[in-house]
Structures are given as structure tokens and as C-alpha cells.
Length: 267
Image (cartoon, rainbow, N blue to C red; front, side, top):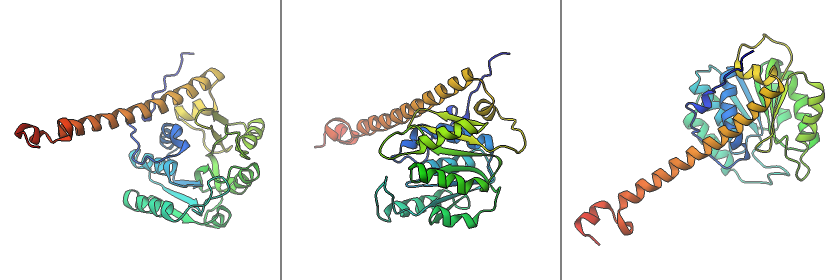
């Protein structure tokens, strides 16, 4: 069988519209491509903070013409790992959602377990678990929200390679690797776990096939591709930044003067 050529949309045209500090930055290209692959009607993120991953999902839904909605669930109070913070984070996320993704992005400022009643079983196409990272918390989030995910839906786990402090996402995901038939792990950027819930109609999508049906060689190449995709995205972002700085410097002319001042000999 000839090797399959995979050239994702993230390498062709993806430019993040929301850039804030987060270790999620290394997985933005994959998030963008996953939304295209799933065309989710319902996205739920548990643990949003400043919204980098959440708004990447939203951007992908818009740019891939996905007719769906995305729910961001967080208390926006902080936890043992992020420590406490004031309302400025929530206000910024709420403003950005209202200004850029009205009718797509919805914020639920509540605890994860309290939000369960608002979602029917089997209604969620894409679930992202990124709350408190202890083993017990991740296991509880997965156990409680798993029934909400439709058969064939995808669950993401962030920080599955982070073995720091009392983080336990890695440990819980290692257990899932032993029991779940369709599961994949990216090792870069503190790790990202990808699990597909059994059942549902078979996929006819190259990315999903590579994730859950590919051989070990294809899995390794897929991991390498998204490492390079993250580096490419950062290099392009830096190039754009330096280009803007150079253009600004040129417009000012020598010694910080504008070009008109230089021409006129102004001081």
C-alpha cells in the first residue's frame, strides 16, 4: 500500500486570531484540523482560563463552515494549580466571545458538575478536559462527562505528559491507553491525549483514520508533523511581528523621526 499523503488545512491557511499565553499554543494546528474533521455540532470545554484553545475551536468552526455551538465552562476563580485571579480574565474572554463569535460561543460560569444538567447524554461531539490536573479531578471529569459524549465523539485531555507538582492527567491517560481501543497521544507541548468514544458511524476522514486506524509508523509521522506545524506557526508569527517592526522603523526614519521629518530636515 502506498503511503498516504496528509496535508492539513492548518498548514495551508490557519492564522490564529486569538493569541494569549498558554501551553496550549503547541496544539493549535491540531485543534484547527480536528474541528474540520469532526464538523462538531456541539463543542464543550471544561477549564477555559484565557480561552486560547476554546477560541481556536470557534475560529475553526467559522472558517470550516461548521454549523454548531461551543460552550466554555469554567468558574473563572482559579484553582490549586493556576492560583486565584480576579474577574479581568473572565471579562476579557466574555468580551472576545461577544465581539467575535456571537451565536457560536457561550460561556457558562459555573462548576463542571453543576453544568452537567444542561447537556443531554450523547449530545457532545467534542469534549476538551482541561480543568484541575490532579489524577482524581481528571478521572472525575472524564467519568461524569463521558455519557454526554456521543458514540464516535472525541475527548481531548491536555497535559498528559506533564509530570510536575501533583499533576495526574498523565497517570489517568496511561490507564486509558490500556483499555480504550481508539486512543492517541501527542507527546509535545506538555502532551495532548485524543480518545474516540466507541460506536457511531464510521469516519471517512483522513485525520481521524490516521489517529485511530493508522499503524505505528503513521502515528510517529503524524506526531512529527504536528510538532513541525507548531514550530511553523510560531516562526510565521515571529516573522510577521518583525516585519511590522521593520515597517514601523522605516516609517519613522532615522533617529525615530518620521520620513517626512527626515525629508524636511525637521528636528
